Image (tube, rainbow, N blue to C red; front, side, top):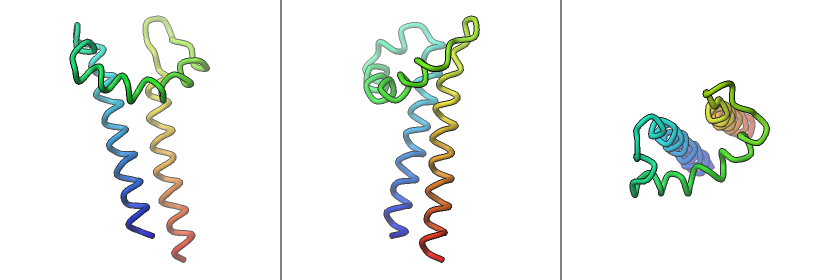
Length: 88
């Protein structure tokens, strides 16, 4: 059981890094049009879309990806608590 929780936490961690890289790519011209940018867009945009619907940008700053990353971090924390509850 701990193996499954470990894999799930690692996948969520990798996805968080993919989101961070995707967000940072917006600072560089034409980075999102590259092959890596398009791949990250395919895996990140479906997750970011609901957050963008409910959290409007503040001027030119879009904080919805930050909220999305916090939600992933809370999910990892919740998985950790669930694992500790199951084991004990």
